[in-house]
Length: 350
Image (cartoon, rainbow, N blue to C red; front, side, top):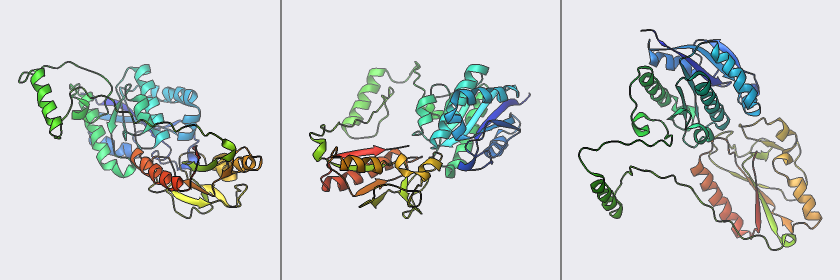
């Protein structure tokens, strides 16, 4: 039996081209497996063959989604694929969006199975979980050793034409699909009562009909008099003093920094920069006010539009940072600002 022909999609980093400095490269192809594709190929054995790899820079793709998708589809078509594999992207947001979009386009254009791998908090996961099998991975490339076996296991099962179990059984993210199944041992009412009893006792239980969970944030009352308000700045755009003294990570930040801006009217190229690794830093490094608008707020302060600008701002990096850590940082920063009697917070991003 001939091996299933698969094409692998990678970004510039995993395609072994370079880091953020190469994120603007246009799509191109290489025959055979590249980077993590070599580990996938080893796991596939002779059942699936990665006949080609398509590589594209994350910045180029996300800034030119329609054009990039068309170019990538043309490159993939040349390999006459029977399956597409993308990533894994872990928790890299731009990469996750690219993997998901490429999978969705390939599934529609070629009518082939598409598989990628992501951390469940990756924005690409929510956008494309219905169009692709998204294997659940850890939040960073350090989890590659577990991601490759999980992705290859699912790909092989699909290649063999085997019936797939539930997302929990197969290790991919739920796609919002519901199927009727037959229970020959217990009727529905018995299972429902058993689950209710476990819930009342505080014991672990698993619903047969899981509902989505959405966090809710209660809006604060409007500021009554902006002219008397004390305003603070918080950013997930990674703006830090030159040299990044707190060593905030470019991705998956493990902490935040607090920086004194007393007497500072403008953020200059010589004094501030961005630590963020998820966007092109050139323009932010030239003028950090583009991400953290201290110059504008100082002007508003002088004109009496606001009462005052708080003399400390807070910064972290949102790129790949987990929701749990982001909530932890927000709580800590919020407590500090509440003690300073701050009336309003402006949160800036990228």
